Length: 518
Figure 1 (cartoon, rainbow, N blue to C red):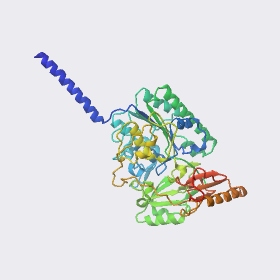
Figure 2: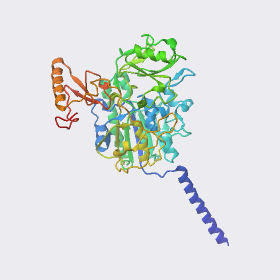
Figure 3: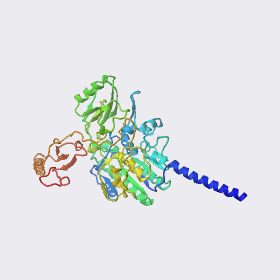
């Protein structure tokens, strides 16, 4: 009888243990894949690397994948863009609509540094149905870290990263990389988000093509070289996938290109209840009953500032659906600044403009065991990075605006999915992907003109001769038919842009017989 009890007890214990294991698996809902992901975000790194030679970045491209560019979200400001990367959601869905925190009721604006770090602003990030990748990972039983990444130190759905480093730190890029490597090697983390402040900070202060810019880009490239050196020394090459991306690009500015909304009598201060934002993107809350008047004043009094009613904003922005926005959203032309402060000092370079502008596009380089080698991928939206991370780590993604079809060609092993991509179901948000229409052309000839290759060649020859006679050094080719001479690099849209110096070469764009239409 004693043996019977003993064996029964042992059987009961084993059954309870097996139930506990089963419960743990059900609770986490995840079986570890063995893969790890490091996302390195370089603030303000434009899609073309500003034309700089960066050997370490080139080596990542050779050993992995480089996208033509990343289509950033609007507004092309750091907080909204970085949270879209982390969540896979457009700003109208995740509700981080600006670098600043503002409310119309209190009529106050909090600085972005406070928004990143102060627990009293956790509500700004913690929204229903909004889940950054580190929260997804921790909730499903993985270890995740954040090193100065915006939102990564505040509780979201009562969850913070397993370890995090505050955004207030003043560490070098190498010190941050060393911390990330310790997370992977010593603590066996599966996911780390690492934020670096440059080249954004340098470009704001010194501008594009400055000696400071090239020095900063060289330091970043050295940091990338150091990162992969540490990955090799730590024996992580077979398990770690590295994604190097950015939140937005940059365009050159001029301190003389500033619209003073009050001093230039663009709008009447008495009609305005509250204005927030800066430079490249403003929001305005008119006084009750003054919405149409303020809109009319903005539209008729300045041609370089484009105002939209929040509820009528073009759907391609994926922005107007957030009720956090004020009633009027304004975007100046690239390079221009808009303000109400006559003492403001406009920066040497800036961002925040229309996300269709090529200067606002960012980068994605990827290397690792899950990634193809030596592959050049087409552009995709930044909201696809979140589901890409989830797939590599075998995580069940939260509803998002991404779609596997946009990133699957980057993966070393492609298993086409038959499932529909998850999309947010918030009542004010789009429930299906919206095909972005081509916006009105900012330069060039009308789109309905059709040119034969022979005719276009004649035009090109004439322009080339003109460039030599008149001293025109750069001609911009916008779209399939448009020509834009001496325009800003960023005047052309992403689906239209080609640039050439001295003359226009269409060798990469035309593969047709002479009489075929371009």
